[in-house]
Image 1 (cartoon, helix red, strand yellow):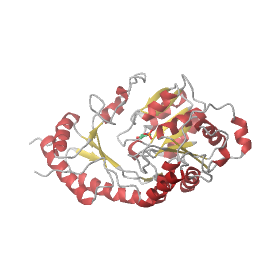
Image 2: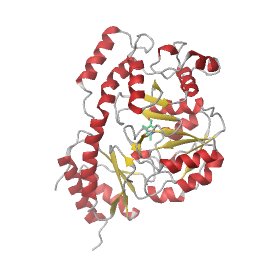
Image 3: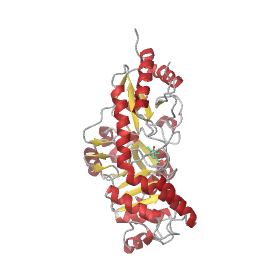
Image 4: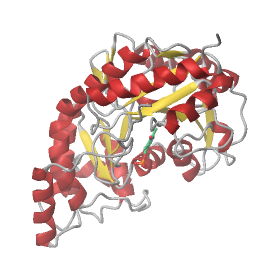
Length: 391
Ligand SMILES: *Cc1c(COP(=O)(O)O)cnc(C)c1O
């Protein structure tokens, strides 16, 4: 019986050019972003701003920190309601809870994006939407922005899974007032931990720079707004330290430049899996809208019959193919669902629960090739015949 032996969590090595830059930083001893001028961090900020077309970029300690910083800069505080997706990963409701605010969860659709009808119905309940482009699926951003503008809701985009993706030609992270990215190992560029924030708004950029802890050295940031903008906010912003360091920035700069090529490699693997899974009984692939340019770093399927999922998963796991299931009773690894976040007040999300009970997820590491994708398809196909097909 065929088994699959590669790891679903194995990364590619850091590029040699990045390793050389990191070694040079270590030789200098100047690991703090304000210890070098110009610094790797400020150069990364300029390069990422240019790559996304944003006026300002701030490099920070993690994706979770980026979202918390964005919420604080928008004045979200204790007791405030913040709209967010009912299906996302734990750092998103966690960032809302970290500022003492309350997540108001919005349903997700079978296309795995935020339900825009439900959003329209709930928009009056909050001033801010922390929109998670969960697993790289982009909602109809034109309609989403119209709903939010009409309701006076400011949008923060969580682009942890959409760095390099776009909707209708506009990069994800550039629709809302603020875009947040993660450079944690399991995202699109890898510095172990790290985050990037983009915005066109000078006041928000200054507030976030002050929040991140700049010790009045903000003029050295890569894309800092003018002095007078900082003067408006100095003293009013607590220092909630969360800077990026030189080592991470040195590792990230070559990866930012390489992102378009990596995105294309991901999509080759994604399309190989998508094509193969179209013929597997009991599972459907998620159709991607024309306006969406995605980065296929993971792939999702919906099972017709949730009751048969455990048998299918066990059969695949025994042969080395590791699906994650968002419908499990208890949280497993990163697949927690809203009912597992007991610090969030329980909310009725029937449609989301029905989707999650059928939702399977597969990571696509770049250490796989198309032969690996073919092997995964063969194994899943064989196991689907046992689990889903009743003779
Ligand atoms: C990883 C992730 C983040 C941020 O993660 P950090 O680990 O804090 O960098 C945010 N949102 C989603 C959906 C994620 O998967």
